[in-house]
Length: 538
Image 1 (cartoon, rainbow, N blue to C red):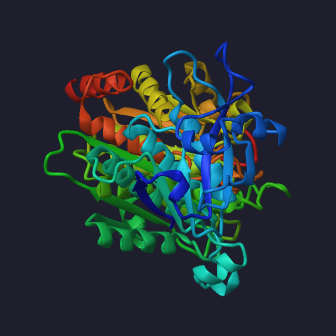
Image 2 (image 1 turned 180 degrees about the vertical axis):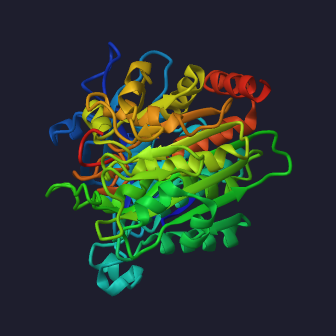
C-alpha cells in the first residue's frame, strides 16, 4: 500500500518523481478561464505566474478528473508537474469540496502507478482536506494483481514494468506534528486499507472465494484486531432453522455460512448492527440467469464485504460504539439439491416464504440474518446488498438507494453518504406494493410486482426486522462493481461501495452529537431506543 507522509517542505527542493497540483475552472470576475489552485503557488511562481496560460495551451480546462502533464520548471528537483482538474473554482469565501480533492488525488495517484514518490500540492485548508487527499491517494493507487505475475508481490519488478501502485505520497501543506493532521491521515489509512480489502474480496474469483473461504478471512481479521467471531456452518444452520440461507446454498457443493463479527467498546452507549448479503457467486439457481448476466456475479457478495470492512475499520478506529456485522454467505447454484420455484422455506424467524424465483435469493439470506440481528435488540440495523437490477435501472451505476422504516434515519444515512462522497438517493417503501407478495401457500412470497422491484425487495426485508428496531436497507447493486473504465479514485471492478458510509454512520452514532449532518440519526436512534426485477441482481 502507498506510504503517506506529511510534509512542510518547499516544492522546489523536494525530491520526487512528480509534483501534483490542482487547477480549476475560473468563476471569479477577475479570474481567467483556468485558475491554479492554492498549494501550487511555488510552482506557479517558477513559471513566472504564467502556469495557467501554459496549461491552457496544452488543452487543460480544469474539468474534474482531467489530467495534464508538463516538465517541471528550472530549479525544481522534481522532473514532472501533474495538473489535475478540480472542477469549478469555489465562489467568494467558499473552499474546495472534499470530494473534489479526493477524486483529484485519486486520478493523480492512479496515473503515477509505478512511481517511487510523488508530492501532492493540492489545496489544504484544514485537517479534513488532508484526510480527503489521503483517502483519494490510497483509493486511487489501488490495483488488484494477485492473479498476475504468478502472484508474486515484487514491488521493484512491478515498478520496472510500469505496474504496482505509487510507492510513497508526500502531502504538502500537512503538518507532521499537528495532531489533527496526523489523526486525519491515520483515519484515512484505517478506512481505506479495509475498503481496499473489501475490493480484493469482491475481485477474487468465486472458485477461491467460497463461503467457507470468506468466513476464514473474517476469522483471521478477528484475531488480528481483537474482534469476537462466530461462524455457523451448514450443520449449525440446519440445527438453528436458518431456512433462507440453507435454501439458497443448498444447490452448491460449497456449503453456506453465517458469520457474526463483533466489535465492542467498554464506553459504548449504542449498538449498531450491520447485515451484508454475501452471495459469493450467483448463477440464479434453477431460475438461471441469461447469458451476459453471470460473468460478474462474483461481486454479489459486495454487501458482506462492505459490512466486514466497516466492522474492522470501526475496531481500528476505536469508535465508542458496539458494532456487530452479520455476513450471510452462500453460493447460488443449480443442481438436484437446489431450491426450486414453488418450494416453501421456513425462515429463521418462523415465517414461511414461497420461492417464486430462485434468482431472488439475496433477500432470503438477508431475511435470516436480519432476524438474527434483531434478536440482539440493537439500536439500529443497516443491511447492505447488491439486491436488485431494478435499482440499477432507477439510479444508474454510481448511486445506491436507501430505504428505511423511519424517514429521519433514512435522511441521516443519505447525509452521511454525501459527507463521505458516496452518491445515494432516498427511496420509498410504498405500502400498496406489499400486497403483490401475498402467497396462497406461505406467509409471503419472495417476489411481487415487477415494476418497482427494488422497492418490493425492501418491503420483503422489512418483514424480517424486529418490532421497534430502526432499520435501513442500502441497495448498492449499481455502484458495487464498476464494469466501465476507472474514474476518480474508483477502479474498474470491485469498488467497496458502502464501506465509508457505514464507517461514518458508526462514527456519528458513537459521537451522539446533534450537529448538522447527524441530528436526524441521533434523534431517530434515541426515539427507537426509548420506546426483482432485473436478472442482473436479486
